[in-house]
Length: 212
Picture 1 (tube, helix red, strand yellow):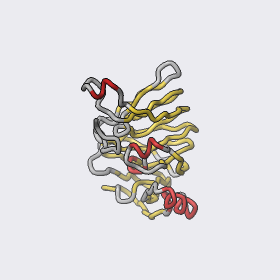
Picture 2 (spheres, helix red, strand yellow):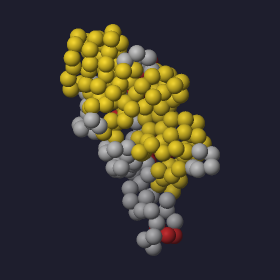
Picture 3 (cartoon, helix red, strand yellow):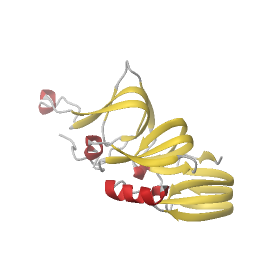
């Protein structure tokens, strides 16, 4: 299996010994050794994945990198976060997914109003199986634990990804305190309940809700 490691916080180094990984198209910045690069259709999920992604609007340009040596990946100087999966599922926006082990399966799932509130589509990308993935964030991400006793509210623009058995509820942050200037300033929030991890970035994307 390919070995993922960070070179600083903005470059991913992947050591391969005949292994393969799937990476965001155009994200290779350098490599050592003998590597081959092949563009994949449907986010790496073949014809069925291509059709699904076109129908859902969750587009993802992916290439397969295979060989012997070390390949380096980066994307617009974004911070990179490593996620280790042991049979669970990672839910992440396609634009935030940099690289995965080739053994991990990717797909799409319905997000409903959460995706719409982020200014994204109604679907998001799933990564499942056993292996490593690298996700991108605008600034150093924090990883927050959710437990049945401790739910979490997140600004949709700061949300990156999550793992675990979590339920999401889309809720309005608008109330009387908002209008007198004592609210959070966020029109909408995502409430996570259950048991899992949520990845949050310190920079907010523009969202449909915006600020009040």
